[in-house]
Image 1 (cartoon, rainbow, N blue to C red):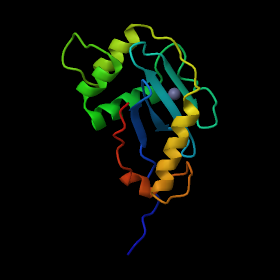
Image 2: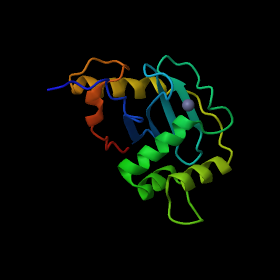
Image 3: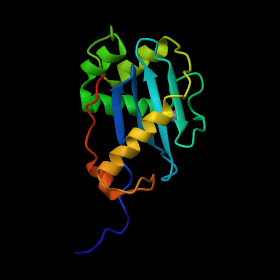
Image 4: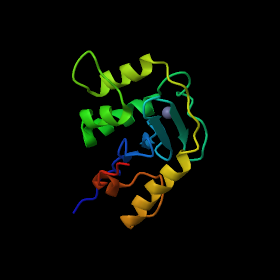
Length: 156
Ligand SMILES: [Zn+2]
């Protein structure tokens, strides 16, 4: 068997959940394979937060959703279906059936406030428990095994 020339990249959004009144999850950095972001959007207010696993604020999440939060919405729609995500966030899409771009534009149009990042630590530790469950070393390095990361189905 010939090993792959280089390891596959970390899944873009390896962890997403609808829990604690938020859509929240872990998004891998586009530029740094060793860094992940913990991103969230609160139900109804759409207050958003994004910070690294080391609790540094995301430079892109100033005033509006950063690319990590947009990626999180996209992954949630894939895993839970757009209707369910829209219902959970209490986001109406008057222009048509909900999908990820419509949900993002409806939420950002309300000029949501930037929430605090206090939820980041528990979300990140749940993500690490997921890794431990799969008997992987808790690490943010690229892991080919994470390609088989099971979707979460946790709903509060
Ligand atoms: Zn971000």
